[in-house]
Every structure is written in structure tokens, then in C-alpha cells.
Image (cartoon, rainbow, N blue to C red; front, side, top):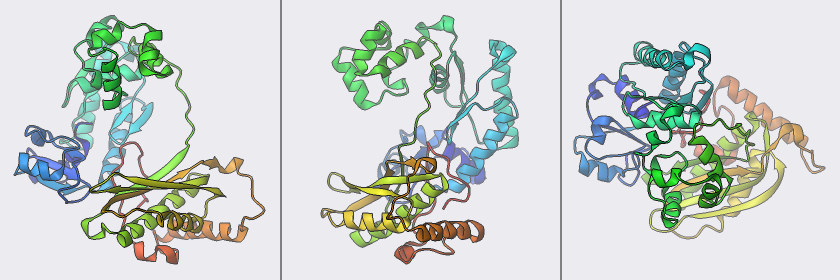
Length: 392
């Protein structure tokens, strides 16, 4: 999807259509734009531009605090629209999905007609403001690269016979998985163009990346299919940028307790125990800080809150900007070995609270430790994880 969050806002409010729009987590100059309409991008405002800088570049920019519930709703509608045309093989993020073509669909002419049908179905059944770019390639990686080549509302085909020449005009940063640090690493090795990169052997690519990922990239860039790895979930996290009135130690702790409560509820819902917890803090005027500790495998909200309060005592002085919590060392419930010290009554109590809240509404019942945090952490935008509709 093209400028997905901003496009949803334009679809919801017709007065915003054709105008520069930016979506931000909150209305503060120190936060950044997480989505910008193409009308705003024409002024040089990009995803990641600070709100204050965006105001300077485009004084007429309309800033909107993102409501993730709306984005989830439209995401689900778009998945349904695409499914009406071709099965969705994988939902990659809130604004991206992949489809595997089979049989006659693999003919370029048929695939081109299918792409047009997908665009029309989204426009007619979801919203005319919602545009997408579609890429066709011999593997998912190259299809994604192709989809990024023409925006907005583009369609690009990369056939096996087009390789590697079709990739020569790209910059190294155009490759998914090549960020600023990897680009600098490749530059240090004398690799600055796609032609130079594509001239390497698999072994040279492995050395350039410093891992087997380089060799895998070599095969992907040549259109080969790799066996997809089944990854194990190793952590679960929630974070939040603090509104200006809560950018102090007591306010940050209130938010952190709520994030911990949310993470613990999600942990139980997804069927895991955690054997460790980490908290991290971002400051306005200094480097960030983090602390962690190990735990006996647990799902208990109060055990997690006790742990973060203990870790919080080591927090250095500074102007707190954002906080987050990470549950680590996840163990599926099926592999959890009960401890002699586990309080089974408290486990039952915790799950009963979850069931009551699920039936009657979030925070109908909550722990006293999180009472002061109620309503402080609304659902926020996530690109790589699609929250359940009932999450807050």
C-alpha cells in the first residue's frame, strides 16, 4: 500500500484528499512522521521527518494522531479484497502482503490483468484514496523489490530473463535488508553500485555480509527460490513515546507499568511463558538506557511489574522521551516445566481476570499496581505486527 496510514486518513476525511497529510504518534514537534501523503512528500517531508521540521517544510501540512484501530480495520478490508482476486500467501506487515501465483497466473499477461483487478477491487470495495504498488517477480524478494520501483499506484515486472540487468539502476539501499550500517559496510569493501554487487560470487557475498545472509542474497537476486525458514519467536515487546506531560520519572513509570500489563496479557494470549524481562528508556538529550534480569518462567503480571520496578531503581537522571518493555526467553506453554514455587492459585486468578476482561471489556478488572495507568497507552501503530481488533 502507498502511504497507507495517510491514505486511510484521506479516505476517512474527504476534506484531506489532495492535500498534504502527515500521521504522527502524537502532536509534538519532537516526534516524527510515521506516514506522509504524496502531496506532503512533494515538499520533501518523508517518513521519519520530525514534526517540527515537517511544519517548516510544509506550513499547510495537516497533522493527525494515528488511530491504529482504523488502520487495522482497513488492513482487514484490503486483505479481503485481495483474497477475492487471488489467495494471500503471507501477510508481511500492516501495509504489505504476498501472493503466490500458480498455473496460468504465472503468464505475465495474466498476472498483469490480475494486478489491475486487485487495484480495481481495492478501489471499489475499500476506498478510492487507497493506492497500491504491485511487483511481480520469480521469488517473493524480487517481487517486493519490483513493487518498490514505481510508486504510487505502480506495477513492475521482473522476469528471470531480465536479471541481473533490471537491478542495475537500483541503489544498494533499495535492497530490502540493506540499511545504513550494511551500506557503510559494503562501501568500505569497495561496493557502491548494484553492478559491483552482482558481479560477486556467492562466497564473496557471504564475506561482504559477514554471514550466510550474503550468500542467500546472492541466490535471491538471481531469482532463485529458497526454502523459507520457520523462525521461533524469542521475544515480545511493547513501547510508547510519552506525551509531553508525562516526560518525567513518575509519568514514565505509569506508562511502563501499563505496557508491562499489556505485554503480559498478550504473552498469555499467545501461549508463552517468559524467563526474562528487559526495560529500555530513550532520553531527549542523552543516550538511551536499558536493564534486564532473568526470571523463573512465568506469565504472572505482578511478577513482571515487581521486576520492572526493581530495574527502574537503576535508571539514570535525564529527560525521558520513550519507554518500552521486552519479554525474553519465551517458552511455549507446552514446554513449560512447572516449578515447585509456582502459585497455581495465582495462575488461575490471572487467567480468570483475562477471561472476564475479554468478555466484558478491557480493564473491567485490573491490578491495583496498574490502576493509575488506566487509559494511558492507546493502541499505537505497528508495521510488522497486526494487533488483534480487541487490543487497546
